[in-house]
Structures are given as C-alpha cells and as structure tokens.
Image 1: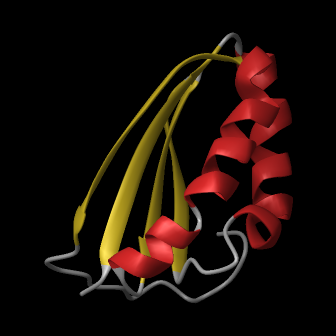
Image 2 (image 1 turned 120 degrees about the vertical axis):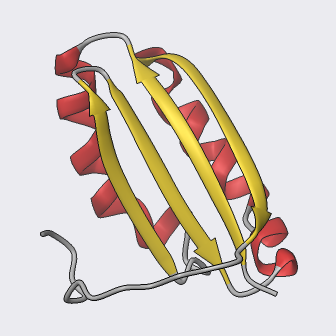
Length: 101
C-alpha cells in the first residue's frame, strides 16, 4: 500500500524560503531517492507544504534518516515543521511529469 507524507515548513522569512526551496528541488534525489512523487505547494509567503508518496511503508521508513538529515540541514531557516503520514487512498494526475511547472 502506498504511503503519503505531508510536511509543512514555516520558514523564518520569505528570503529563507526562496533560498531553500530550490535547494530542496535539486537535492530531492539525494534526500528522497525512493520517493515516487514529490510536490511542493506555496501556502503563504513563508510557508510550504510538501507531499511525498512512497510505494510502501517500508520504502518510507527506509528514508526516515534522510528526511531527518534534510530537516537538520535547513533547520536554521525554519521556524516550525510538522508532518502527517498515512496510507494513500486516492491519486489522480493530469499534470505533465517534470521538475518544474
């Protein structure tokens, strides 16, 4: 069963978010090589929601340390971070696959 992780990051400033999100996109394969799907959504001037989907709970668990390393690497730019994890119940996509929209 596929697993989704939804993480919300509140950055210290707009500049911090503008600096860190491109780094996240470039480092995605390093920090999340097992992820099948990754999307970032700007939810405000200093906040971002990231959705990561894995093929299984085992795949998601295998990257726990990598996710912790990523958060540690940006912690000085982040005011708050929290996440939710659960089984994926529905996914629909018409977007072209690619790195940037």
